[in-house]
Length: 295
Length: 160
Image 1 (cartoon, one colour):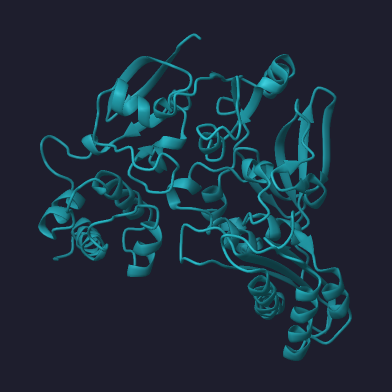
Image 2: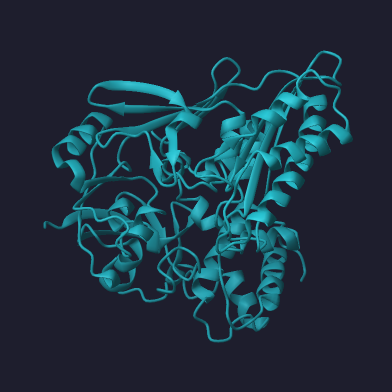
């Protein structure tokens, strides 16, 4: 980035062991870079000031995307948003995740931006996050002390903040295979039709009992209405073991809206967000139910 | 700070080149390889003027580090014509008047190429979605979409 005048070194380790050693060696001066779509934007404006970038691009095996019936979906750290969008197995088994990933930026951006890197950037309005949460995703972090895993909700700590230690790399995202009779949906509202960041976003998963009418479990994840993605637990409880009707979906939408306290910002008002949560939860529940019946 | 030596294929030619580690791929192409077709627009990945193909995939090259292009195959707008013959997309952009000032056009044409590589028979909605990453201040996009539709028909061997 010649125009910005910012200089830094870029190291390209051959494997994760080397990457972690470099992070330990350079300490606070080092930043990991994957696709670069956040890092390369933040450096010229001084939001991050690396002495050294540690690029993962040379490390073999990090871009994998595998889907098996027993392990579910495994996304390597370098799997891009378009890898997910173009994956037939994701379309079949994780449609809400595909819905989220295909809305990120432009096609050019989706060819570079990694899902793992996006999670590490921890934007409250990230599009892949609510679907990954309702699918029960966990992240795997590798550091000098070995690998640890944690649920995604635990990994995301605040806007731009994660549980990643400075000498750790997010290496993998594990998403269990959805159960039978479950369906999930992701929707967002944005001022523009494309190239925009969510005003509010919602993902919902509905798991049905054998009768295909009663809800065994509902998961509702709300984005862009709190410092991190949040679960609408009261709305979820209101749906549990209930016959799923349009009236109940309305009610769940109202409860979910009352559970969040969004802010007013450049994209719109807090009140507008509350209304949007209600609408999106209702719409997602309707669609998720249809998918659960079909599954 | 030491430079890195990288090897990459650019428009079909293998190049070995020394780059500063903080260069973007766009910087490399414009200021080291002296291929000025790719444009520096927003430098934040929003406008698409820097679009080029890396291993066949359209990317905003302002966001990619030059060193990350090591071992890859790059196609810039300069590489689209073959043996002096314009690509059907280029032909269509000319005949439909899809360019005005021309600044967005190299990125737009390459994004369109990627779109048609992925989907040889796109609907208008699919064209809009695939081209959403290329901003044009001049044309209002209509003739760009018409040119893409015509080029896709020509590439499928259909009469336009």
